[in-house]
Image 1: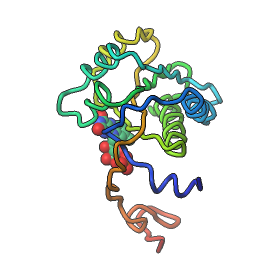
Image 2: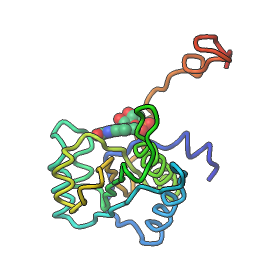
Image 3: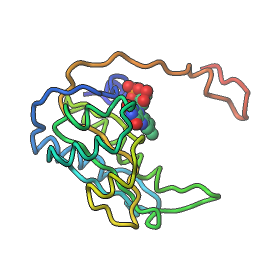
Length: 180
Ligand SMILES: Cc1cc2nc3c(=O)[nH]c(=O)nc-3n(C[C@H](O)[C@H](O)[C@H](O)COP(=O)(O)O)c2cc1C
């Protein structure tokens, strides 16, 4: 699959078929995350692959009922990946904590690879960290950055709107329209 097609087609998937994720696909997807760039190549991330129904229910319980991805985690997706990162294993610059960026890059690579494999994912950041930490015995030095369900999409969701390039791109200096 062409990279640009993957970028255009990837959606946040919140409804899944119950079909299991084959181990070889799962491994390739995790591998895509492993290859991400990071601050000084520190690779501060860890991925926890959750397939146990009871544990998935605990993860869903960590999310507010109004989180639209709650059912995907607790009921429909066969796999949930918990993304953790160690802030001390990454850099800080001018008050910016780069562990979030490192972990986000790994997650995004993993998600794009999942789409290339015909599988869906959804970034989830709205959860109670303490509950996820307890469910997956995450050690105190690691933060839980995000979760994603992983599985066969029940259907391809329609695209969400994006700002025009002309709204977000400047030429040479802030505010000077680039004409893209
Ligand atoms: C950092 C981050 C946190 C998010 N948290 C949640 C979440 O808790 N629950 C949810 O349903 N979607 C969540 N999303 C998904 C966004 O709502 C989604 O990416 C956005 O609406 C664009 O839709 P698309 O991914 O289908 O293009 C999150 C996305 C990002 C990048």
